[in-house]
Length: 443
Image (cartoon, rainbow, N blue to C red; front, side, top):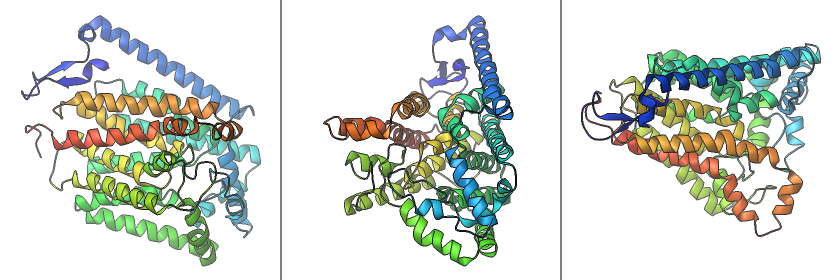
């Protein structure tokens, strides 16, 4: 697989302008050994995934915490019995992270079938839905973006079941796996020119997690007005359906009491948005909410607007190569991750879209200087897939409070921000690479 990651050596034509990373990878024997290793890892991941997320739950031995699922179940039960779906959220605003059900009303209404099933059956069914969403989303990304000569099926198994931000959703019952699938489907529609379905997928994703609404800038820049219309209709139907099902009072409660809490300045260690990293830079709102800082607000808004603007400017309405279209969508995903007030660690599964798009750019010889893209992509993969989960697994509230009373607190917070910094670096490197692409890439 690695030999396909080409490195540019000059402005020559694609046929002779690239060399592979590592001369030793050119031999057929080395390629076969590399492919064999990937297949062994994929089989091991598939077996472990089946044991952890299928067999163990069906036997009643699942070891995940599933605390997010409990919030969904409580909201579903409240919706079924005409109760307050936001009761658990409003009664728990500190310490960070915010807990409880914090989604639009329509989501609670759609989750009601969980309340009608036996508890064990409902939890197992929910886990299997999340597993299916994760695998399907990764498969779509791999088969839509990666070269056909790559072991895409094996990579699907590896990243679905070993990439920590994706598997976090399975262990904790997080709905981000559903959003992940919707974003993958939106990518597919983006690449195939299916405007109506594109708007619908982004709209449904935005009804679950607000951040995907920022992807509308890609539609506007491409002048896909049908996609914009379908996005608007989807949002209207979702909000209207929530009002019809649960009443306008519930929507007003969400807007006036839930969203303001979500939008507070938040430096909790799981928050890997640009805003989260800047809060930690000032040691602000890390262990508990603190009064808003005007300077932080201004900086956060400027960074968010700049990220969205850069992603939008890289999109052109004219037809262009598939690799470039994939990279444009990837830039929208990066802008979405950076610009939100909160980008929890479990939201970073969408980063796989970016990594696959970057791999396609390099393998296809679409950019002049691929080495910075390769380095930045690998750094983001290591930070989000290895270092961040190791830190999260070893951290505890008591330990964080203890460290906060020492001189190590500020340096530790900057290490916590390493994934956010890596994502920001990848955003900058990709933006520069797309601006400096060779003249032989047709548009």
